[in-house]
Length: 550
Image (cartoon, rainbow, N blue to C red; front, side, top):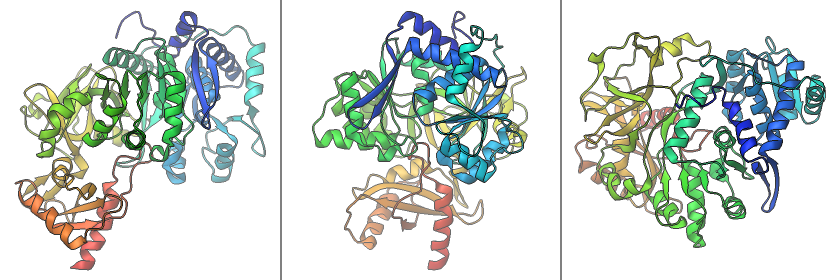
């Protein structure tokens, strides 16, 4: 990270406001063709007023503050205000469900809660944070919960002395971001100011992002990077917690109206958009790059997306997690021209070359590893657990010592290696190949089966939309079961499909042991990206079906 870059990520906003004051920082889409916007100068002024006003209401340096506001102009202003004030925003995906939300808030022990009316009502009725929350700010109508309104906070900021960014240290907490909970209970990853600053710089360098670009931001947390990078954040009219249901005509309208140069979308959203684009032979020539994360993007989706883009423009798939992002990246040209063929043979999914972090593949353990040793490292080509260390890697979960111990390895210098929870290998070119989640490996008497290499074999069947390998039974003696979701409208008889799938599996050494096939009407997926298959839920479903058939 360049030494002249600010430590507090919010300091990027006033810099951009000076450089391009009248350029839109945020554009919000309403329906198909209505938009509201806020310039960089106005967003900077608004967030300053709010930061000063929040301080007058006991939300200042170090105050953990739950923020539950829908993607809106207020969402951006409040987030930058909290960061400017040195407060610690607690960001939890509302799609996690009521049980997880209550537990996440209890974990974070917030002193303040900023939310829309619906969130405030839920907080009171369901008892969220009742033992710790002392300050409440409502965006919208205030009813029976009391507290302060958005306009009142802003008015207090007008009466306060001119706001100045407080000094922060690199390791001061900047935010608590909860994981999606797709592979276990959600955990609050502690982001420091230096991590945020390193991420902004890493994204800028990795994708050559320059001020003045315009980003179609379909995921609220990633959208916040836009103004920090000098990009306009164009927020489409969609339910961010259900990207697979986004209306593609609205996405296209926003891209074309504002000549978006960048786009971030989950694989499920790109699938929907690319199908729509193919149907109407659309072109999106303004886009310079497309980014997608949350799960691997199937080559067929990459092919469809490429048809919408100008020659030479690629879809990039950064690899990482809430705890460490970005770790690696690959472009669609390399996938379609090279790595897809090895993936189809069961080599795993190539997620590209490592950027800005140290990465090692270590032997697979389920137990915590207290201290790092080079003896853990596996040779190139062998599949093991992916571990990373670097400036974008979080060091702990908030007040979750057991989970921290399970995911972090002390390196002897006061820093930690993060265990990604994924298994994979490095090839001779230094590229990372991901083979699935460690917890999704199937441990049979004959050896280990990894989800991604096995599923790739069966996904080639023309009637298959996607598959998921799960294990039934006790560890080390599990029965591998292939769960299958068919393409929409498939009319082939299940008995015939089962025979054809087993014939496919018999052609490869690593899939010959898979003899159980179950058909599922629609896999459960994660809330955040609608892309990660919940194999834990499928495993329970499969176990019941296998037992009933035996």
